[in-house]
Image 1 (tube, chains in turn orange, purple):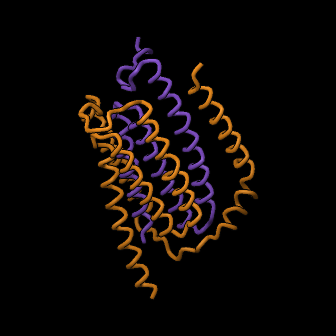
Image 2 (tube, rainbow over the protein chains, first blue to last red):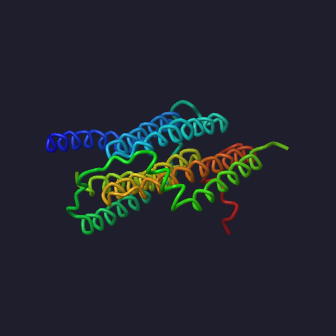
Length: 168
Length: 99
């Protein structure tokens, strides 16, 4: 039973990982802005599925509501309002592409080496399912001050965004 | 499941985000790449939360999601303002601070 569950988890993880990496790669290479937003939605949905796999239900649904529901729509509004070309365009990358690829590959190599060294064969054993009540107990208990700070930050960001974007 | 599966996946996505930020000219695409990087961090937080068998990883991931939402709101407002002033959001043209 347990072994079967672990095999199923590994298969699901493999599918999600391949999908997310492919979508993220297309996101940074596609020449179509709207398609990039849709690839971002795929990556975010894959991340939400990963959270379900790790038994973090509440975060998964927050991810769906906030990221896929709001952030992607906001980015599509940004595409629309800045009148970016909706169709295919060949002028979305700058001419330091190869340098950027070099930096990203170097970072990946460094991160990979450090991770392989530090967490070589640590396994995620039994995953306890955390109910939303436990998450909220933690937020409104030990982390209530950061929570309040986050709400003030959201208010400041809201006021700032309106002040920046209004016409007068 | 190995912890490293999740960490490596997050590292790959983070590096793709870094590439996007460095190589893209369109400001909205740069914002999307930043979202990619923040998501990689969230995957790390949730994976460590499951690994350490506590709820703190999820709490931190929720805070990161909150701040990412605020960031993309202000970021898009700035992009709109740049577009209104210059009729273009090509980041290579924004060299006002260049000496």
